[in-house]
Image (tube, rainbow, N blue to C red; front, side, top):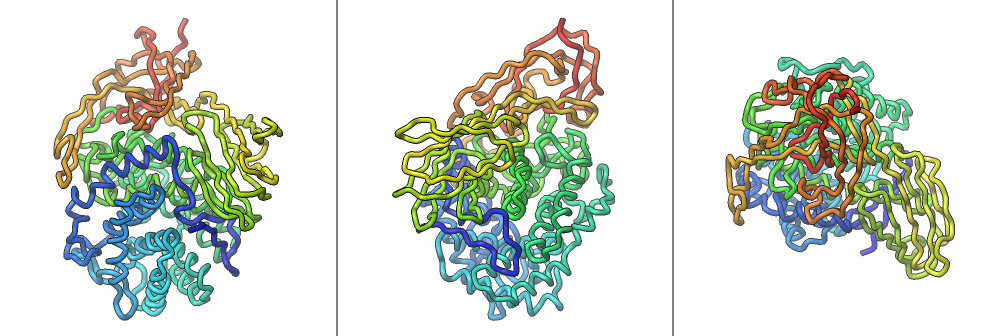
Length: 637
C-alpha cells in the first residue's frame, strides 16, 4: 500500500508537520541492524521468556496479568514488526490484535473489566491499547479498528461522569486524547471532541503543575506521589501540546516549554533526560532514570515535533535516543536496567540513594525492580524510525531527525522514495538519494541541529554533479525544486567536540548528538538465567563491576583526538564503539564509592598529584559502566 499522511481536521489546529503512517519509513544501515538486534533479543523472545506475556495473559483471553503489560508490549511490537517487515513479529502482533478485537463488551468497554489486583474499569491500559491499534490500522488498513475504537469512546462518553479518570489514567489523559484526535481526523464525528474535553477537565492539570513548580530537589520518600512520578512526567511533556490542538490557547504552547525548562533546570541530565528513581531525584549524575521514562519522553518529543515544529525538540529527541536509550540495555538487547545513571560505576544488587526504588534497580536483566519497563521498552527504536520523516503541510517531506532510513510516500500522485544513507550520529555526513518515476516538485526540509553553526548542503544531479551548495542558516531549511530520478543532497554537519558545565562544576563532553563517557573495563557476574538462553528459557540477569579505574579528572582544555570507525553489527557494543575520543586525565584517589555508586563529583578544579594518563571516551550508549560528568584538573605541562 502507499502511505499517505492524514492532516488535522478543523476545528483542530494545524500541525507544523504531519506524521507519516507507520510503515512509511524503514531503517537502513546501522539503524536496521539495531532494530534487528532488538528483534533477536528480548523483544523477540519475551512471550516465551516471561510468563506475564505468555499465552495465559488476559489480553489473550487467559487469566493472568491483564493490566498494562500486554498493551505496553503491543505498543512496541506493532511498530517494530512493521518497520522491519518481519513476518514472525507481524504474526505475533496480529495474534494480540485479533484477540483484543474480540474483547469488546456490548457497552463498548475493551478488554478485562478487572485485572488481578486492580480496580474495575481502569481506563489506563485501554488508552495504551488504542495507541497500538491506531498504529496497526495505519500499517494494515484493518477495517475493524475504527468502529471498534469508536464504540469504546462512546462508552467513555457515557460513563466518565460516573466512572471518572483516576490514578494513572488521570495523569496520562493526553495519551487518550491522541487517539481521539486520530479518530476524529478520519471520521469527523464532533462528539469525539466532547470526550476529549471531559478527559482534559478530569485529568491532572500539568500546565499548572509546572507553572507553579515546587519540586526543585530530590523527592523525599514520603513525598512520592503520582505527580512526582518520572514516567507520568515524561508523558506529561507532550500534554499541553496535544491539548493545544483542540484548545487553540497559545498559553498551552508556552506551557510545553515551561515543562521542559523545569525538568531540565532541577532534574536534567547530560543525555537530555531527567532523573526519577522513581520520582524526581535532582541533578546529581548518580541518581537514576527509569527506562519507561526514556521511551515515553522520546514519544512525547516525537509528538511535539509534529505539533509545534520546533527543531529543539528534534535535537533533544536525538540526544535521548542515541544516548539514554541504548545506555540502559546490554548491546545485544537481551537485558535492560530499570534505572540508569550518568555516572554509573557499579551495577549490583545493593542499596543506593534512590528515592524509592529497590536494590536491583540498576542491574541488567529481565525484570529488575518492576516489570513495567520490561513491557514498555520496545517502543523506543521503532517509533524513532517512524518519526525520522514527516510530511509538510505544503506537500513536501521533512527529515525531522537524522538516521539511516528510507521513506516512501506519494507526492502529487507520484510515488517517491528518499534513501537517507549515513552513519549519523557517529559521523557527520548525511546523503539523501531521491527515487521517483518522473520529475516532481516538492520541498525537502532539512534541519540544522543547535550544536553546529556551520551546516552545509549541496544538491547533486546525476548528469551535472554538484549543482547548488548552500548553508543551513536557520533551524529548518526547505530545498524547493523539481526533483528528478537520481538527484541527491549531501549534508555535512560538523561535529566538533563540545564542553558543557554541569552539576558541581563538572565537565561533560559531547560530539554531535552523542554524549561521551569514560570507557571502563567490565567484570560481569551472572546472577539469574542463562547467558545464552534457549527458546523458552529465562533471559540473563547481570551484575557488572569495574575492572579498570573510573575516578578520573579531565584536563579541561587538554588535547582531544577523535577516532571514527564504521558501526558494527551491534552498533552500541563497547568493544567496537564507532567513536572513540582520547583525552588527558589524572586519577583522583579521594573520589571513591558512596552508597554503592560513584561518590559526589568533586568540585572542580581538583588538585591531583597522580600522573597524566590518556583515557578513552566512547558514546554513552556503548558504555554499561561510565563516568559522564567529570571533575577537571590542572593542565598538563
